[in-house]
Length: 322
Image (cartoon, rainbow, N blue to C red; front, top):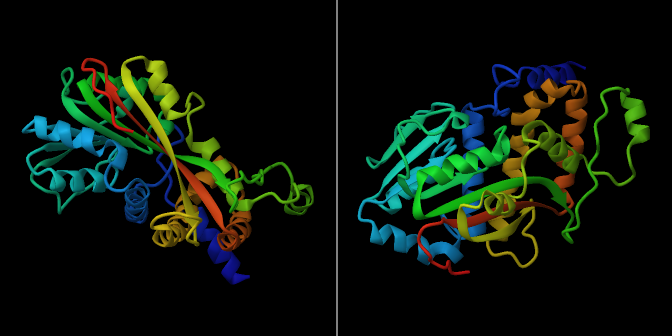
């Protein structure tokens, strides 16, 4: 009994945003920054580097054409992508923007951080400034996703390159079929919840579904659709990537490492997002039960899916290599 109480207290004291009006509902502490570091490595393996292999020639061409190219990382978080980009292109200037201020003791000299509320635009930015803008796992978490894309478009030079990436809240089985999520109903007790559970529903998929409801804007649409809807971009191209959890997947390059990373990443994600779940109405007594069932599914060959879109701002007609 003592152990169960300890677990509940641990979930209940998970770090929460200061108020329900905060646009970002996950913590910004060291544990979450470490998890985002793992997730960065996952992205690196999935897409083949700091940017997708299919866009490499176009991006490197931009960086060569502009001796001091200016790059922005919108919603940079731990700034791991921005700092690695700064090291890869030492003649460039890389600026990281985020709502929450962090410290970057190992930052290269050509990296700088600016704290800002993205819903109010980018601070000190006058007109089209950036040659390349990167925005990963951010757009769905702001109240007005298309508004943020407009902010990005305004800050991007004509012909500039946008790298836009996002996760998703759907889980898949080993044949890449979507799993039916367990749906939490706070109005019924645990026994009724167990009895009413749809046969075959997934607690792992259920947690993702819950986090999607909590953190995703109701105005969010697939990232490539929003780029097309905006109307200010050309050469819009999107690609999906599957990541296995605790197995190597099928026919995936780097699948073994990706599976190991996802095992760590998604374990940490449950703990780090538990505070948001409690805040949404999930009983703290339910969390140890949910976590146990969630973790058991890591041995059942699950996948997550991730989305990446690239585009050029209108102004220079350059066809991206696909």
